[in-house]
Image (cartoon, rainbow, N blue to C red; front, top):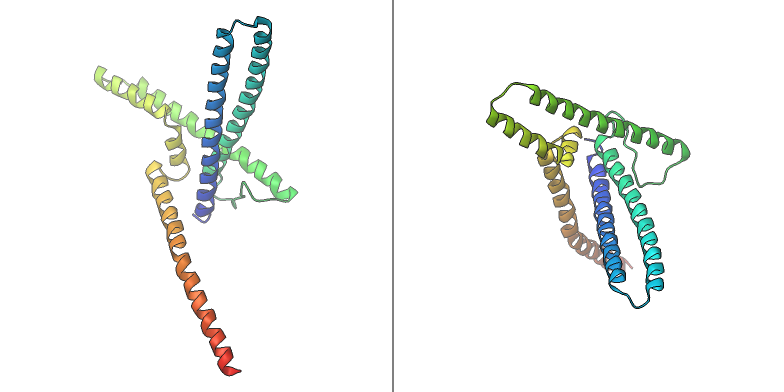
Length: 209
């Protein structure tokens, strides 16, 4: 509870970076496909086109590999935020740290990843036990559908393990976003009040002099 606001803003930052990286990866794949199609359709200069195609493919592969590595790191950042040990002081992902604190953050990251893996292993075991129980044909199909939907909703499962379901996470987002909006709306009023106070102070000084 103590670090909810810090985690909220860090999760928003990570989510924005994830969305941007996914868009770049999708654009890279699309450009690579278009480049390959254009080279395949061209027959004016076969040797030059082949060379260009090879270079383009190599660069695209390197870019895609770098983006996938970035995505993997960002996914781990999100796990770090959600599964951070609740009994430990939260260490920010983005603040500069001294060597000792940075080493502690690495350990906390490992613990968070282990907690994430353990949670999903438990979910798989639970789903397997449900499938092993005798049931009617209709119930079995329904359970299989539920299991499939469950495996496709890791984010909501992560939220449950992090201390609340997806609804709780949405409520938390709404709360902090509303607080942020209220602060932005109050800012002009605070400036007006500050300006009025400064004006009164100046008048008082002139009167005194």
